[in-house]
Every structure is written in structure tokens, then in C-alpha cells.
Image (cartoon, rainbow, N blue to C red; front, side, top):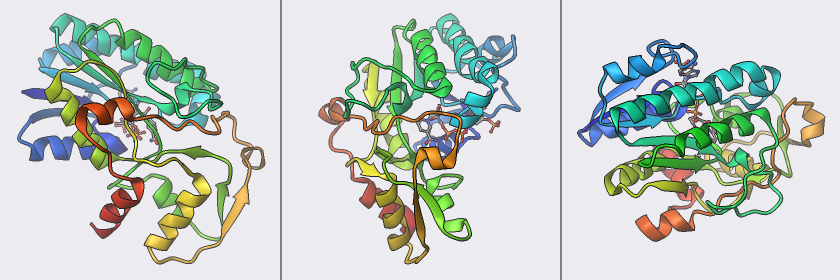
Length: 271
Ligand SMILES: NC(=O)c1ccc[n+]([C@@H]2O[C@H](COP(=O)([O-])OP(=O)(O)OC[C@H]3O[C@@H](n4cnc5c(N)ncnc54)[C@H](OP(=O)(O)O)[C@@H]3O)[C@@H](O)[C@H]2O)c1
């Protein structure tokens, strides 16, 4: 089976590509240089590769950048996704779309797959609009995840371990970290099972950013000072859901327990 990864140069895409290849899948992994979803011809470009399965993990994923430039966010996350959907439809192949806990407003966690979305930010709205295009394909999977971490860095762990001076961490922000290695195996499970629909995947339990930061420091035997801040102190343009924890019961019922983020973090730190 030939699997296309759109967003293959991203934090998640790179890990997924490595794991799929280790599992003997043939992959076509594309970053924005090889496939720019803003371009009219993107659907044809995808079709040219004739994949048997498409994973769409590309996005303008910086929440504040999306807020500052909503036009760009929509070009990539909404109309770009529409182009992927057109290609999947013409090729008649399954499509798996990576979405986000930010489609929810954070008022009633934990969120099940059929809970009503109510995004607070341009990013969340654009990902939800992307989901709505993906739903047009009957053999599609929408996989919502939160707080990605894993090999390759450029994530919250990197921020906590590599910066200088006190680390500003928002105290009242809660969700579930998602290990990109575990997520890659979840994607594999979903590809093999052909069980289409919406799923949530994240490593339990829900945790505050503060606790998450403290655990990262402790596991890496580092003693940096954490400065407790609020979102207002940071003055960032995008609103975030305060507690957007995803319920993963549907996935776990089908594929078994998901390991805790503490175990995943330990495995990752030991690598
Ligand atoms: N990071 C998180 O904590 C988080 C949380 C929830 C959900 N998600 C979702 O998970 C998925 C993967 O996130 P990530 O953290 O791996 O993202 P990332 O590291 O920011 O990577 C984004 C990917 O999208 C590609 N891309 C950006 N603009 C594009 C365009 N115009 N055309 C084609 N490709 C484009 C990038 O290509 P280049 O790098 O080559 O430009 C890159 O491969 C995304 O759908 C994101 O919304 C992420």
C-alpha cells in the first residue's frame, strides 16, 4: 500500500513517515515545498502520485499566526483541505485528517467525538471547517489530537528545556499531551481497521501546563524556575480553550488502552 503524508516535514509528519517505513509501507512524504496546498493545482499534484491512502497532517498550526493572518489560515487549513478532499474523492481512496482539541470551547471537558464543537480561535474554526470538507468523503477518518510532543523537538518540551531564565507557563490551561510516536501507531491501527469516522487520541490523564512543565523538568533532572502566568499576561492574540481534554474511550474500546503521557514521556526521554 502506498501512503501519502501531506505535512510530512512537520513535527508529526516526520515521525509518522519514519514509523510507516519501519512497518514496510511505501510512503510519499510531502512538505510545503513539494506540495503547496494554497495552489490551485494541488489536487492534481496529489492525484499524480496515485496514493492508496492519504494522511493529511499539514496545517498552519501556529495558533497566534492564524489569528494574525486569518486569510492565510483559511487558505491553508480550509481551502487547502478542500483540495485534498477533491483529490481523495477523484482517486476514490481513504483520507485521514489530523484535527485538534481546539475545535472545542473548553467549558465541558472531557470531550467525546460527537460533542458540539465551538472553536474560540481562527485556528480552531479553520480546522473545524477543514473537518467539514473531510466529512464529505465516506471513507474518511478525522483524528483529533492535542499538545503534540515527541522526537524532533520544536514543541513544549523544547520550550521548557532549552530556554533561558524563568519559564513563563500558563497555570490554568489543561489538556492531554499526545506523543507523536504513539499517535503514529494509532494512525496505523486506523488505516488497517478501515473503521471510518471521528476519533480522539491523546495520552491520559488530563494535566495542567504547569504540572506538565514540572514533570518535564523533573524527568530531565533540570532545576529551572517556572513563572506562573495567565493567558492575559502573555497578551497573545488567540483565545485558547481552558480545558479541552479529549475523551479517548471510543478509540480505546476499539484498539486497547492508551499509555499515560508520563510513561510516553519517560520512553521518549530515554531514547
Ligand atoms: N502541534 C500541536 O500541538 C497540535 C495539536 C493539535 C493538533 N495538531 C494538528 O496536528 C497536525 C500536525 O501538526 P504539527 O505540529 O506536526 O505541525 P507543524 O510541525 O507545524 O507542520 C505543519 C506541516 O504542514 C505543512 N504546511 C504548512 N503550510 C502548508 C501549505 N501551504 N501547503 C502544504 N503543506 C503545508 C508544513 O510544511 P513545511 O514545514 O514544509 O512548510 C509541515 O509539514 C496539524 O494538522 C495540526 O493542526 C497539532
